[in-house]
Image 1 (cartoon, rainbow, N blue to C red):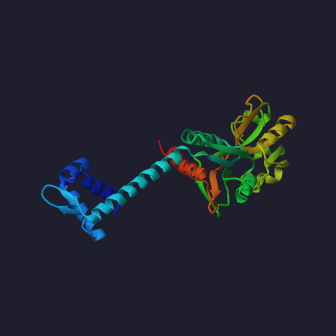
Image 2 (image 1 turned 120 degrees about the vertical axis):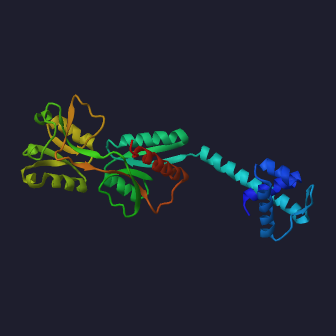
Image 3 (image 1 turned 90 degrees about the horizontal axis):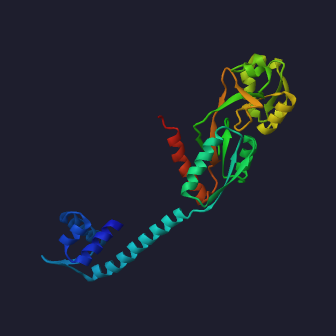
Length: 296
């Protein structure tokens, strides 16, 4: 028994004529007759006394009319309740993000989601990938965008359509600013600030390869904003992914050559109970990112 057949049954019971009921339901009379016979077979009772002119309800049919109305009314109410819950979805999503160009994609994602669910708010926490990862583990964040490589053993993730490009951050008047791209040998002997994250430093060390002994490493920094202060005040060079919104009159980026890139992942705990707001956001993100990544 399904809701559609119950609706067929109620229509015939109301019209007391299978031909008229079939017209109202926009199906053929033989199809409707077959559906009613299948319902009677499934229930093991006769629902109608049939003659050439009308269908009269049996006692079992009269009982089913009342129950069928209750069932379909409940289905309609439940459907409306679910739709209202969707429309009035509210809550807060704790989200972490690093200082990435990919944050622009995150902003578009959140903006699109809030057009549908305006009552859902976001708490955005900015830090390094390692600290964001730790907060995800502790349940302090619901979701975060992290720079690969990332241990995803206990996580589900979506890959963002933008890859971060590793560059050298320098003052606009720095000697290397005249170059289109920076090689490892260009950095020989210059004061360099590296990212604090161990996995990121490992990738940079691999890129430096045989020139690593010639490097002058000043220190590490976990935030590009702080790196930029030392670049401007001390004339240091920072190896980092390109940070948006820096003043181009004071700073410039030059990409590494050969090029070095990193993927950015939208990550969440696989085993964590999710709020309805988070469930809807992740569903929206999967759809949104599939469109963003689709070939033109």
